[in-house]
View 1 (tube, helix red, strand yellow):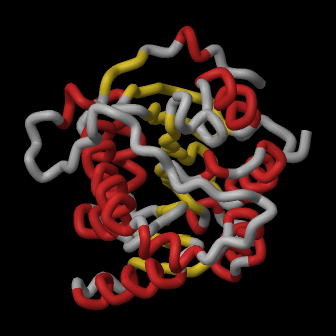
View 2 (spheres, rainbow, N blue to C red):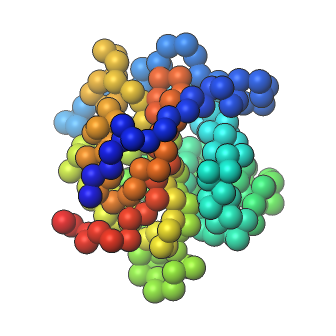
Length: 253
């Protein structure tokens, strides 16, 4: 299926979080993401360390996104899933800021995945200090995410309640090629329960980031094969897509 994005109502995130001092807002210009070449091996620990302040700022912006979505009655089903104690998948979890935010508000169990081991170690340390044993953080690459033991367990679960209820992905899967996105989305769809939600944030294209950013039509074409796009919110330099698992698709088609 293909979602008709033009028919979806859009609302700006900034209008919802502008007055909240605890939320770190984006700058007026888009911050250029780390540039990498597929032909050049990347030391992700070094890259994360080099860009840590910027990454942490973007990570904390996720709180404002969650607040905006969860306070909106249109998304009461997402709030109900979290209140029921569902499994939450944090894709590109960094130091675990957003996972721990949700775990302190709701009885959820979170699984965070990040490619930088240094970020994973910091997330584990923070979770331990905050006594959040419901937050698990693992090192993994989205290009081989189905080989991560925690993800394999989710994929092979037969009971719907044992699968992921909410997944979020703030500026992470956008860096994959379309072929890699398809493999990743196959996996994500497989480990999510019926009616699950996927919240994805991606940069809007500019001259500085057009190699990794995605237009709304691009998101509709690639992600819309797996998820129904329910809502699109505009943020400073990014779009946030609220999507729901499409249970009618045949994977790989």
